[in-house]
View: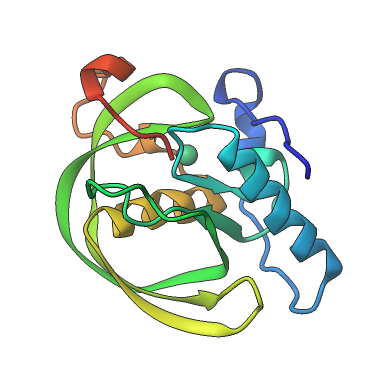
Length: 171
Ligand code: NI
């Protein structure tokens, strides 16, 4: 079990702006990285996604919890390795927040439909169709792998919300 510190925009924007490299299949590091990402995400009860660069590792691995917009409890974190968004559409407004930019929320436009390819945590290839907030969450995390942050996607510059105002979840 390893809970890793979150890289913060305020103190280390450069680390969040680096583009992450694809993971080599069969690397022992991947299993450890997935485990650290899950442990770290679970340490933050409102968080529903985390990308490797947010713990200082520039490899293309994210963990996400699906079902965060339903009344049910979100799923336990699952890992996605080398994600590729092959199709995305139905762009809608949503609230965004980020563990690397704590306390700040904003309205962004993101796809609410997505076809996603990648490897699951056993490194088996998959192709998933994601809808609604699940697509939003994955889009936010894949952005992290490309050095893109939600503050780059706000609809209204300088219109930010507090946690209470947004009643948001953090990705
Ligand atoms: Ni984030």
